[in-house]
Length: 133
Length: 183
Image (cartoon, rainbow over all chains, first blue to last red; front, side):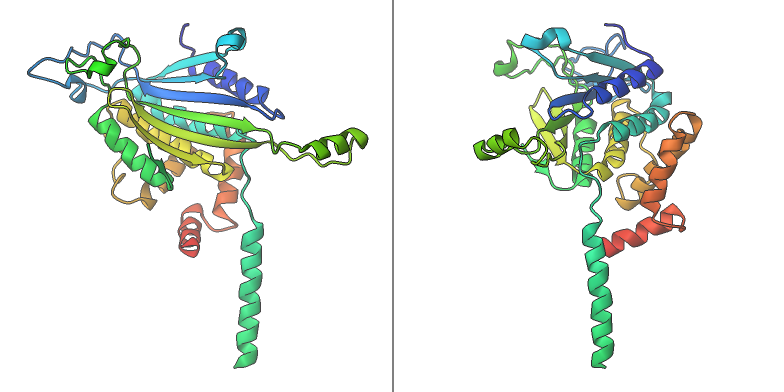
């Protein structure tokens, strides 16, 4: 499958997240790794065991997303992928964070009840101290 | 393989792993066990899995109740969790972090961004890795900056900054004070 542009990728990723909205099961997998295909990284040799440690310039990063459907439900599988050039990394991850945050709705929201209880306790404690003195 | 309790620890170890093994391309000294496996997909990769689970299975009695009075049993929203995993297929190292807090998502994706920089063989952002609180602020500022560049997510990013900043104080000062209070 061809790689998508960033815009297409984010639109489809948002669709993928919204397809799990209000559902009580499912999974979304996001993967990232160095995109080394066709980048002319030499084979390891006796002299240089790890040629990938000393690459000449920055390399792109491959980002993938899928809904994790496999064998019996292969037909329903959604696979998205995009290649991020090193210069676009910051902008990409900024948007990525936004999409993930708005998509991952089943996570626990920030719990504010504890903090409120603490504040009350503190207030109560201060009053008691004032009374004691 | 370990689950880390703090996301910072996971980030640090993952960054070290990526530094040591950014792309484990064909090595001549492959272990025998792995020799039969195909050589595709051998870069160290970071996987983020977002799982959804039903809230809680109903017991038989509850199910019977639910059948009798359709709207009486309150339904809980589904639970989700997020699993981050750095995996090096060559050595089999897997570093994991699991969370179910929505508040952490933005920070974690920023961490993915820093690991992405490692993968791209870009130099680290200055100051990152030495102090733990500083890069987080930088990263969030960068996120806000990139948000303003792209027209769509701007509206979403500003309320997020408002909630994390807590009130009229500028984000940076508020953050530091809050963290001190937590510890």
